[in-house]
Image (cartoon, rainbow, N blue to C red; front, side):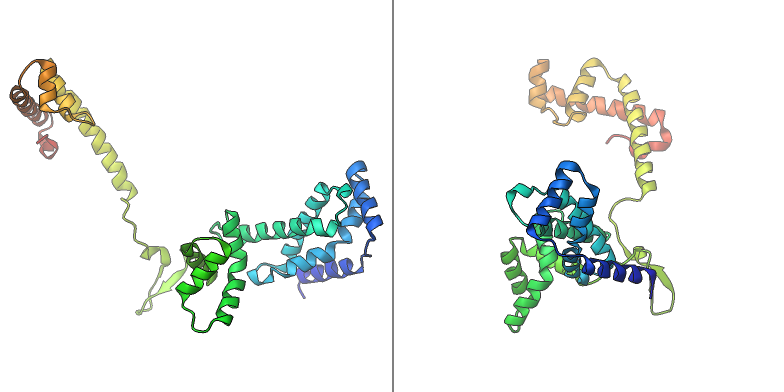
Length: 290
């Protein structure tokens, strides 16, 4: 028997030996802890309710996490309940503590069940913890029900989208798989799973290369702009270098010339830029402005 199993059994035996509390004794301990911060009162109150922690934790054994860990998390929830309990409301501590114990255990399961974070909303949390039960119940009461209809009924029962049910069902159907896990082919050679993932995004060296080329072309262009006159420069900037290129007609109105004259000036300016770029960078003719 492992040390973990031995400790767990000892914990269960200790919890089962703890005496039940009367309502009066429970209130006395709760007041002593809240008003006087009496550690011994907290110890007696929590120990007498460890049976409850173990019972709640046992309901979540099917999620593949050690029962001892679930019990420890439930104990955390029990202490949180003791810190927030208001004895004057005349509610039994076990009734109040059950919610905190269950919430603490569920949060622990969601954090550790998978490396992929899930159950981030209340509806997703309800789906995670109720999907298997509802699926078994509906499949047992309706013969030959299709997966889509099963997912629809579960979605209606929990109040989530049908696509969310299908996605959660797929996640619960199998464990996480490492991208570094080896995959064997028919010839006996192996490769990592990540080697078969296809990405449309450019490679890092391509991103860096494009960034450098873009900055270089930008410097060449602004250097070549010096060959233009003020009017040519204005037309090129408003027509070619602005997000919303100005029309020939609007530029003609601003400059007091016809739109045909604007087109002629623009054409002449672009030709001057092309010549300037080729003269400054003759080996980069592919980057010249058309």
